[in-house]
Length: 343
Image (tube, rainbow, N blue to C red; front, top):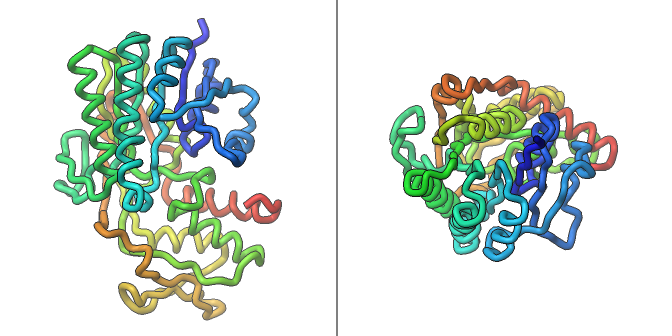
C-alpha cells in the first residue's frame, strides 16, 4: 500500500528536501502551502519534483481548512514544517509568530486527534528554544530558555506535542533541529545572505560590501538534506519521542564567512573589533565584510551546540555533510545561479 504524507511548509527549504526524499520511497506526497501573489514553487521546481506532488492550499491559522484536509486524506504521516521561521522578524511580528508557530500546531494536533488519530505526526522544533544556554552542550533533557518571540512560540508547540503524546496516546514526535542550511535556504537567513553575496561579487553583479551583525555568534550547522532523513526516521519508530538532530560541532558566523569566501576566491583577514570589525581580502586589500550594528538582535543567542547521541543510537541517524562541505556547496550553487541569472 502506498503511504500518504502531508507536508506543511512544502515550498520552504526543508519541505523540498523532505518531499524529494519521500517520493524516492514511493510516498504519495500532499504539499500544503499558503497561497501568495508571487510564484512560491521555485525550490520545488529546482528539485524537479513539483509535478509529482499534490498541492493544496493551507494556512496554519485556518482551523476549518486544517480539519477538512486531515479528514479527507487521513494521512499516514504528517510533517509540520510551516512556521514564521525568521528569528529576526519575530521581534517585529511577535503576535503573528505566536499564533502561527504556537496556535497553528495546536490546531493540527486537535484535527489529528479528532479525525485521524492513527497519523504519525512530526513537529519541527528548534534549537532556538535553548536560547540562553543552561548547559554547554544541549540534549533532549537540557532546560529551555528561549531568547526571542520565535523561540517562545516554538517552545509552546513543543510542549503541546509532548502533552498530546502523553495525554491521548498519539504518535507525535518533535525534532529539535539545530541550524541546518543548504543551497535552498532563503536569502533572509545569514548563511545564504553570505553565499549569495559572494556569488554576486565573483560574477560582477555587485561591488558592495557585505554587512553582517554579530560575527561571534556560534551555531551548530548541518545540511538540511541530512536532517529530513532524521524526521522520517522518527515517524518509523514504534513509539514517538523527542530527538535532537545536530552535528556536535559549533562554528561562528566569522568562520562561515571564511569558508564561503575561500570557495569564492577570497582570503579574508579581520581587523578591528566588535561593531568596528571588518574583513579585508588579502590579495586585493579591499574591504569585503563589515559589521553593521543594525543587524544585532535585541537579545542575542551566542552559542548553540547539540548532542545527537540519542538520535544516532535509537534512529541510526548520521549527518553526512561537514561544515566546510556545506559552505562550499552553497557558494558553488549560488555562483551557478548567478551565471544563469537565477540567483
